[in-house]
Amino acid sequence: MAFLRAFGSWLPPRCVSNRELAPLVDATPEWILEVTGIEERRYAAETDTVAGIGLLAAQDCLEKAGATAAELGMILVASGSSDRFCPGPASQIAAGLGLASTPALDIPVSSAGSLIGLILAAQLAPAAGRVLVVGAEIMSRRVTLNPEGKNTAILFGDGAGAAVVDKETGFARIADSCLYTDGASAEVLFVDDGQFHMDGSAVILHASRKMPRAINELLARNHLAAAQVEAFLLHQANLNLIARVAGALKTPLDRFFTNIARYGNTSSASLLIAADEWHRGRPGVLSGPLIFSAFGSGLNWGALLAVPRESALS
Amino acid sequence: METQARILNVLHKVSGKEISPGADESLFVSGLLDSFALTDFVTGLEEEFGVTIPDSDLSARKFDTINKVDAYLAAKR
Image (cartoon, rainbow over all chains, first blue to last red; front, side, top):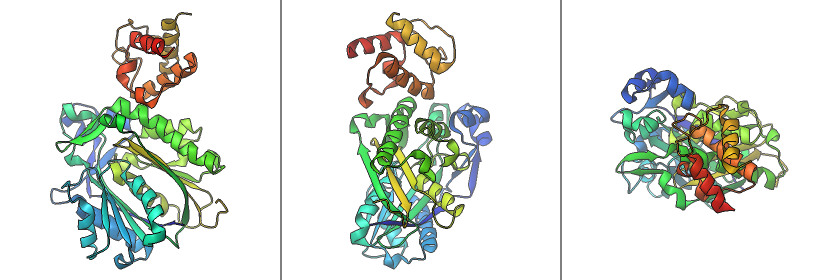
């Protein structure tokens, strides 16, 4: 078994509003808000690194978990914007936590990387004990702030999130998950030459069909209705996409936690940043299941079901 | 009803607009489709024509004119 024990996050202090961004990309603040649901995003400082902001989220998470780094059996770090391709930020984060031999592995997948990390952590926790999952992104360095780069520049922001998955204790038990890869469609979303490339229409087309399909698969397999889910925690890609997923599941949008208006799309960090904010606003015992879902480069997508600790759901 | 008229019906339904573009005119440029309406359009085509559009065909380029959609549906039959 594996349990969600705690979440953590860190956001850079610099806030970039639509009003500041719009003239750089030849758009209006109102248009950016309409097509994305984003009002502002955070940008890292020049001196920040992906590993550095990931470390800050990891430390926040360990503190909330009441755990020490020495107790970790493994670290998984998701990032599609790492400063260096190999090694990625995982080993630096482990070193920053003072660990000299704990295995620390990179998941170089944008947007869906944290979900992949959670699903792997749930499978590894019975052997590793306590697994730290980090999603850290400095996407502002992967977009171009000019009219040609408009479609990605308006979306992305920087930040980091983290989670501790534990084999024995936590506020929710990870009950089920599904994970898929469709490499034939990989060209719709990729990082090349340091820049993020996206065929927006194709991404929305894929994501708005694949995420509801993955969520419905978990609900059906566990004999649950969408109405029974306490909260849906999704990769914060675009508010209109989250609304599409809600519509496909015939579930009110207010059951989907969103913070994209304030942080933009922080790629693989967004799922864990959202989870951390949601959990801070909802302490105590869960009243129902949680659904996590994400979609990203690869294409990779999937969903994870977590249930109240004492749930009878097998 | 002929195929192109049925395609246009689906377009009108998902866009809420009564624009009738030329058969080779971009449905995006004409204002009938945007990235999100495209998703509804593809689902609407599946329902209207009783076909399943596989994920491997999920590209805006396959559905951006009435003629392309017509040819796509003909190939599916």
